[in-house]
Image 1 (cartoon, helix red, strand yellow):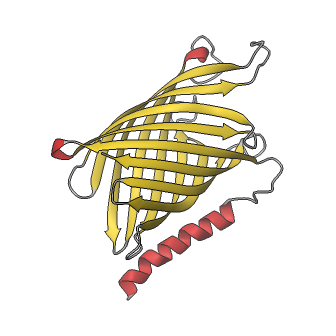
Image 2 (cartoon, rainbow, N blue to C red; image 1 turned 90 degrees about the horizontal axis):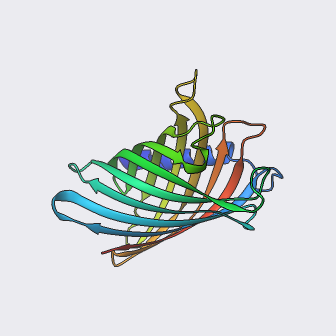
Image 3 (cartoon, rainbow, N blue to C red; image 1 turned 90 degrees about the vertical axis):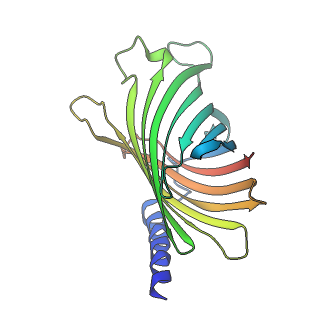
Length: 238
């Protein structure tokens, strides 16, 4: 039917977006990384949900640790279509030695988020939009004026999932755009985008495994970092 074809067209649109915007994985100036996550969540009373996520990332063609980060999140299901929430992330970022540091070192960052996510069911498809306002404080840069610290960022993410009838397998695709809000003389500066897709498998509604791919690129086309990333996630709902 036409009503079922419309979500299919949306999914095809995501696929075309990935095809035209993501460059070849063989590009010499594009890194290859791995992002792994462990997600634990528990539904509380009155629509509240508590979640914890531990993430480990690799960069430099899987040869270097990028960072560890731990996220604590509290969200509230407000009706059927909207979920606001807050979260805190402790980030430990790995740096190679440089002019100011004789050895490799770890940098601590503190990130606070406020977000709202809405979703609409389109048959077996689900279309979602999440807006996240985040501020990130870099401890080692607290005395330096060379970088914006803390950074205030708006992250906008649109996603589409499909529930396959009779199979606990869910394909997904998304696009996310980051805008820096406190850059001097440019209060809504576009900083980076991410495009991704993958599959999520759920076992008995409590255990889930996600395997995906994403492409991320900064706004500076000459010197901005670009990466192809394999994503692997494990989730458990108590």
